[in-house]
Image 1 (cartoon, rainbow over the protein chains, first blue to last red):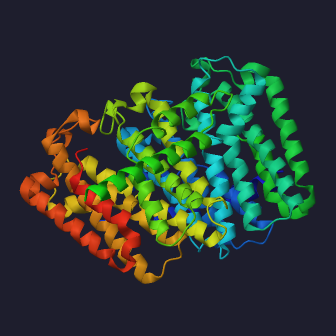
Image 2: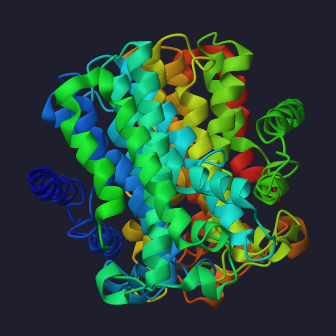
Image 3: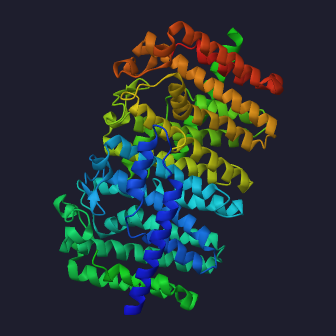
Length: 299
Length: 299
């Protein structure tokens, strides 16, 4: 267990450095009035975040022997979407957060309109990255990746989930509705990480089903664990405001199930996620470590 | 001349109806809490706008014999980006506009966070549309379209131009800088309409160069004409607030050149644009009519 956590920590650190390098190259500041826009993107994209999504893409791609340069590039595209969504979600009219990853949110450090444009720019860059032949020599693979990421981040995925979340203070959601909300808001993009890996690896149908099940289960497990951390609340460790769902009168897995049942549910999901990886044998050890991390982390 | 204008008006009306139908199908309101998001997208996307960009895509595609279903689909994707950009540009922290296309802006009719999410959703849908095999059976064409639209709308295109525009009140721009601003802010997406047509039609290199020149010239001509209309100002016809650049102390083509020279410059650009179409012969009549419309319209 100790060794697994250590190897996961090492993998996250390594991928974090690669993603930072890749963002550094992608977001070179131009010598014109757009400099502020690029500096804003760099502020949010570089040097922060667990890089869990790029790790999922890379670990998934590893199952199919996809080269590292390419898998990092796909991970970078997914991270562009993740970072843009955090920038927009933090805005005053959305969650109105002042703190993200332990530093002022982008609209606090810069201003609101720069934040909106930086998010929009990262959004476009994600698709520019995937469409480029450096991602894969087969254009069918590139088009499939674009379709998968667009579906996961659009109104049938992440953006739709954020809409439901914004209305959750007004509508009383039951467990099924909270599950659905989280499957859209965070689950769709996590699912896309593994789907993208399967596309890059031209995985057979069985492999895709297993990875889809794994992604669904860890997506929910991470969210339940987030709710538990939020419930137990430590702002310093989380690097962001905690207890805000409770303050907003929103139902969470913890408010609906109670902390003990929520914890048991998260553990059961992790076991189920790991079970989905059986066909991949030892090669999937890193993905198993990610699943365990969902419920063992303290931030 | 009368006949040309009439045929352009007929073409815009026809394409407008097709785009409205296509949006109606794309944005069917789901029976869950995302309904508000889809209603917001419909409010901004359906029944408004000149549909000049879809017309450019379709008229460009016609030069290469691309089927109408497909060219409308590509025009729809570009229009998704255009509509999303208007929604975000109208926000209080950006241009703070209350009126768009003769009705309240989306954030006034709904609210700010719904407007941001509706913009983000249309942004993702544009790429989902292009990546789907209904757009073209050759995935290379689909990937090329995605790359072109992402470049045109991202930080090296439209979003970058909007950033410069936002800073234009603070920095004194000269004619070259205003030209560059407009080439990014509006020119890149107009250029993408013709580039997308060339990609769909697998146009040879010469055809692409001509269309690129045409797009660059009409992009600037439209902007100069917009500045002239804004200068002469009639809110009722424009369907939006006029004179706002002047109020914000921003330089425009009219403030830098004076109205008379600006008008002459726009006319020269239109002649130059039409010149670029010579290799296409009579087939390009609709694109010529669009160029003339740039300087002849009153809204």
